[in-house]
Length: 374
Ligand SMILES: *Cc1c(COP(=O)(O)O)cnc(C)c1O
Image (tube, rainbow, N blue to C red):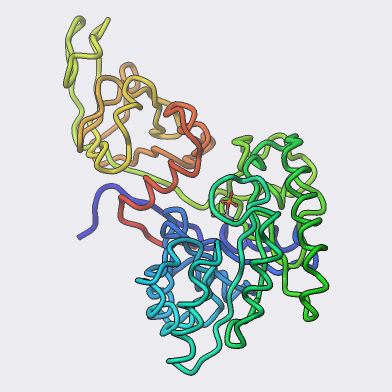
């Protein structure tokens, strides 16, 4: 039996977005970012679709995600972006994953293990070109490349950096990061006769930073149908629009009439001002519909917007549907996505929650039963 709360993932929208990203990428190959269970969209299913559509590689955060992809039969190169430490190396080698090395400290151990396993290991290096998170500073990067070259069983297969502010389509920082990345790449080009692929652009880079495509691009959010600046695509008139992939729905489980001046739910955070009709939903913060949406969010029923009233509980939420006849127990309620001609986007919910669409998608997608549709 299935939950009354349902996440639908549109295969057609995933394919549309992949195609759009590929067109925007021009000659650059696509590394499809599927970390965090594909931002809540289901890592295995999404990876299969992106692989069929021609992705050059997949990107995950931790090695354990890469193992799951291998167990599911995915054959593409898989970049592991985080957690390249002695404890994860044996599994990385055994599954043929591609580690992203952030500094020289792991190289001797990696090479030693490669020798014992009688394999050559391909790796990517991460330059910190201004992100200020992981990676090696530009002034130390040439030495890092030389260090890799000093091991004959380690093969440099890529050099990457990451944008910190590419969600802002007018950020001057992105121009600066692009320049540092180019200059550093030029400085080690002569060390590197078989020029290894360079990659810098996330979705923001791909959509907003001209010239950041290089040899590969690493979109995540755009594949799932959202613009990193939260614009919902409105400001991006010229490129064709991304399509939202995830839809979150629930059902009305009770309809009740309560008098004026009646207090609703934990903490009595809402008091009716008129005789009211309240629809009860079997959804709450356990489903990622967080308490900060209390008295703020709206939902769609029969294609119309209705407000959330009172505190969101672990598994219950109240909706004020006063004055609207025709709603029945069992009717579909859309928390995110389209219903008839109305739509609530992850960007709109993110604004109510004071966060970004990424977080909304991860929460909803990873805390509820998903179903691939279309
Ligand atoms: C998550 C991630 C991406 C994808 O970012 P989006 O903004 O979702 O496109 C790209 N590169 C790295 C290093 C990442 O961690």
